[in-house]
Image 1 (tube, helix red, strand yellow):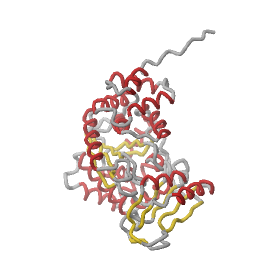
Image 2: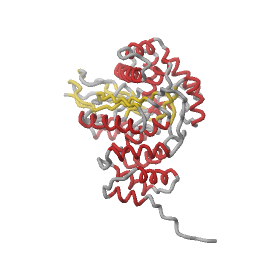
Image 3: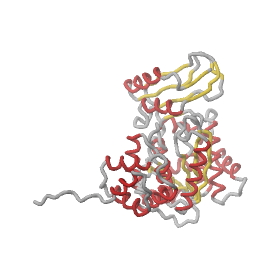
Image 4: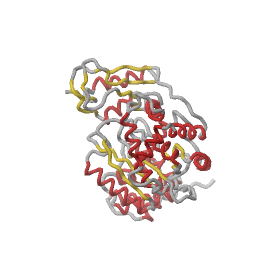
Amino acid sequence: MYVSHLEPIESLSHVRAKIYNKKLDYKAYNNIITDIVEGDYSNIHLSAFITACAGDRMDIDEISDLTKAMIASGKQLNWNKDIVVDKHCIGGLPGNRTTPLVVAIVAAYGLTMPKTSSRAITSPAGTADTMEVLTNVTLSSEEIKTVVEKEGGCFVWGGTAQLSPADDVLIKIEKALDIDSEGQLIASVLSKKAAAGSTHVVIDIPVGETAKVRSTEMGEKLKNHMETVGTAVGLNVKVVVTDGTQPVGRGIGPTLEAIDILKVLKNEEDAPKDLTERALLLATELLELSGKVEKGKGQETAHKILKSGKAYEKFVAICKAQGQFSKPVLAPYKIEIKAEKSGVLQRIDNRKIAKLAKLSGAPQSKSAGILLNVHLGEQIEENQLLYTIYAESKGELNYALEYENNHNDIITIN
């Protein structure tokens, strides 16, 4: 038997350089990402790399180089089409589950939209978590191709497809650290889009006091960086800055968000209007960005597809092509939170209501979360139902209720 020391990880010299705020080039980032994908980095090494890149420590060239390195680290899908569309929301806004709606509308129109999504990093649900309530989202790249060739779109978790595999490794550490920095965010989003074979991408950036992006200035900066890096990696990117002052829809948590999605697709009377309007806005932008729909005609086209039921038909067809179409089931334990006084609803803290949903068990407990009954600007009466907390066990329900009792500023009424 021969025993020796482990070979040194040479790319760690680049991580150390970044810790001291040195600018790295493509070769350095490529070396780092290659070693990450090969499993050479421990969690400590990964944490050091993520932390070194956090804040404003990466310029636009570095973000572009990191994105390119992440694209090159895994498989890249080729659809043999001139136009392949995609959409992404940067997150930070509870309940903003527009992606499945946009895929259904756009695929029903006839465009190709192979949507790969992430699981939650710091939120109560990612698109993959929500769609997993309704269908199988763990498809291989070959299975993704089969579904998309048949139905024109898909809703899958990007992790099993081996598209930008370094991203999936980094996300686990970012989740533990509760860090989601701008450079890593841009590289994560755009590397997945490019690797999925997309050509035209709409990015939704919600801006609000308690959203991930808190000011219009920050939103515009991120918008410019997204579009610049998109061009650098060969993508046609359109960024839409949207209202992020309050949650979207009623559900916060995988199952509750899935229920919202189905209500919108079925055109039910109690479908959340804000979720419907936001999905139509983004579908409009994507249809027009593709060049297949004339400028100014996208809204009418998207609206007709949704209201005709064609979007719902396409949604169900895609789910079945992925293996199943399941009906969402609510958690067995719940408690209603009511207003202690009358007044106008002036503020909903996105971060705190998201944390409350997480404490109830979401996203790991799929049916846990918050069902919101009120929105900003509404006149609230004393003892009116504000929201319901759902949990899969009494312990999780009590855990969430303890947080709620200690934070009376989740919803502000004056």
